Length: 383
Image (cartoon, rainbow, N blue to C red; front, top):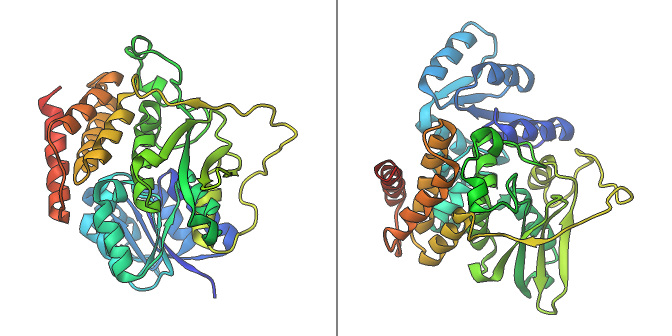
């Protein structure tokens, strides 16, 4: 029987590539969600025939409802953030893949886990903002948490030898360096959103592409790796690998290193999360070693790219520190994309909110959302 998937965030970059994998593997789609792209979701409904869909924008939900009216076999329609959490919790799928962008994905991740679903996680903010809550829920409910980010998938793949994994001593988390690698603060001062959206290797959504340009994405991935693999942040080294061929590596007690390589194509880690523990067929081009002339390595410049420094401070503080950093960044990136602040203001604001409080201690889900609200308000008060 074909595996059934619920895909949250199906119209985004990860979502559309996930559906490429669904096609290749012959999987069934139980549920789909989107925020506001009605036309694309309609096309996905026509192709994959989900039983349930959710539109988190209420205006878009009304448009989708009107478009589905009178259609034979139309899916059940859920609405808003509450509908997203309900969709994640519904019985039916074998795995829920969460590719929602931002803290909006946290509630859905918890709903999926608490309903007993294995979770393929592309929403890194679930672990960044609520890592303690998510990992406790995974342990309590006995489900699998499968990483989808290319770097965390690479680490996960390198640790499949469980006996060797017991001697893990270091994670080498790779970064492309983004479009502004090697630039000074003065060179970054006038960079526009058009400049920042030109990623050299990856095709991603706007928010994640900006995060790559500021190195915030790598800071968030460091925090995510702490929760996924149980190493302290000082045991996670960020290595700039400009060609995006080595997706990450691990080092063991004997100082041997194992790395995962492949072309920069997100369908590879998406597929591995959905097919694990087996591997599927080819969904991306093979890596041509005859044409691969150069692999370069460098260090990440956190003195210039302050978002990375802020994330390291945040995870060191613990508690809600990472949540505050994420909330400030989400709001600052939104303002940058609206041409309301400059590129360097993003790092300045994220670091300022992390420095504004101690943030340590335990927390509840309500605390997470309140911290996120306060971080966003902080950004607006410090423009």
